[in-house]
Length: 584
Image (cartoon, rainbow, N blue to C red):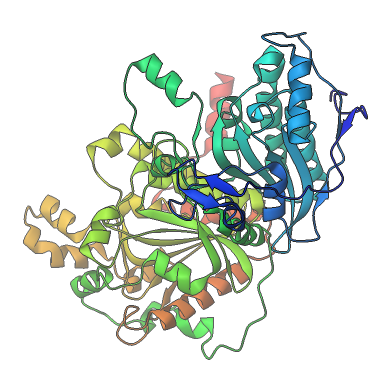
């Protein structure tokens, strides 16, 4: 590591300066005049239009960290002018002017502290210092801040505000993108949560490195994030861009950030994330009236011979609880995360972090809806490739943090559209099957409604697979089967019986490990009781898997799926054949 921070030339102040504000402030968003003290009380956000004004690094740290917990990291910064650069004024003079104007040695301030009681290490950029540009000192401080997180085994929070790489340092500035990215890779290896809080603006080399490489990316409303600025893009492509181009809202729709959080909610949202990302043991049982062994049926003979077509109709009822319904009822402090970071945000798959009976988990599931508008918006629970890639991203996060994965399955199948095929639907499903087979953490899957074909299996390669009594799981829908084999959609009832898609049939076939008894009238008649039963069943499965190593969990999963069809094939004597081929 370079010695650029070793000098005592300029040090960060030991205490945070008091906040100052003019008597009146003109909102940059709507030009409304706001009384200065009101502007400050409102965290520099306009009470009329919601515009989020710029905060200094000091203000940001005061806002985020719990009172009395903030300790600045004691970096001392030496002057850096590696190229002897001069434009309209020498680079050292620009640095000196920025230091005088801001009271900072450089464009980033780092600290350790707590957010809602959870330890965290923070590097916070300040746009006032040469546009928050990424120079050698900034890259070094951010990298060293990450190393402090590694040493403390604490999550890392990066707050960004930057115009990009610092031109006055040439290629040395460019190298900071790679250096900071490598630091984040080391935190990935160590299993430490990394969070990026994007503020306006975040562009260039910062956007193309540490700002977008964290596990979770949060943005303030209307914050801009991109590689090339709007003016550069318009001049290059000779087109007029949409008004919301590169804003947080624009990026959320396209799958590049997890969520947008107004400034007043940052500490609360970050606190939830930090708590959920810490592996925790479950809380002791609370004396529930029902026990898991009373709820989960493992003997098919204990289940009724229901009419298969009637079960199909019940599984598809629009009133059945969705994944988000269960998340609200099952989990403490659930925080939904969005985006696949590649091609988009699929509303038919939802997921995020939360705690089940105190145990931190990652929940992923299909999402339908309870009315025609939501069903249409959620694509009737049929995922696009972006949905499966979002699920894969969350599963990789679970593996990194050592958290169990819970999946809730309720889909007619993967979306069979032109765009889905253009974006690699089959590949996205296949990648999920492979990824889930090799996850080093416990995986519990529950079919809560429809389990349709490979679109369902892509979330169901699990150590334990359960289903509700009135759920179904099949290679194809009864309507599709009857249309293909009988050339008559009216034969759907006959096809449903032939496919053996009921919970009783699937328990007999060994496809599922247990069937959950539904409350009287079905899960939609009493969603609260259903969620309580579901929580107990999932907890029981996770308790069974507790203490198993990653290798054992993988082996268990591989063995589970290897047994399907094994009895129909007899192996040839491979050893003799190999010897014969070698001799020849």
